Length: 175
Image (cartoon, rainbow, N blue to C red):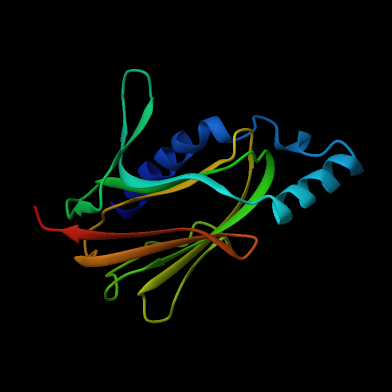
């Protein structure tokens, strides 16, 4: 069951980022000049144009992803939720880090899917780090409610180049 939830969450995460991901990441830098521009851009011009959190839905007919803004997520298995941030005027490779803090320990975070994901020893915090290519400055991540997720106030903080770019506080509530 946990593997199925992880596959669904991964599929939604990929769909949420489809507009932001390059089809061929090997084409990110074709020369030194692009690398210099990207580094300069990421360090000096990092600004957030839009940050949102909410319930994530995927239309099964056309796979279009929508995000319904809210600060309450129903404690119902397989409910997808997440965040999306648009970096103003940004294009290129970006590494973001997400720190997800729970009000108390999760029953299970599931098996780690990569070295990009770690859980604190007390199981109250998970850190995800990813490097992506964005054409329009959009980055994001999704989660799904799983059995044993604790109700209460949850917090997700997002960083780019160790600079905070978004903080989302929401409640996981019984329906």
